[in-house]
Image (cartoon, helix red, strand yellow):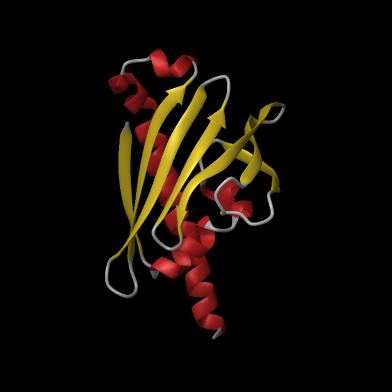
Length: 152
């Protein structure tokens, strides 16, 4: 399992607002190149994001499904990324006062060929990817938060 975290300069509700909008995932999640559709009710348990992974013209279509959801606290996903495999991903939000949030991302390969790699090797691939994803999430949330604060 890999685990990374990132502080975000926005309240937990603003961070959750981005996670709860499945259409934003290609904007911040490294590897997701296109969101084809988002099930109604996302992020309800069982709902899915239908996404593409890779760079055109080398893209693969797959899905990510919600396994557990606790609004403003935690989102656990089953992320398919074949041919690599399937990962269990948990995003946990921890308020840091009223205007900051720490997001922790845990990822564990649970199926597929890449699961056979030693955990240390998996970490060499997924830790940098997940750190960059959380940096992009922070930029996305903070940019939205600043824009909405100026408009109010």
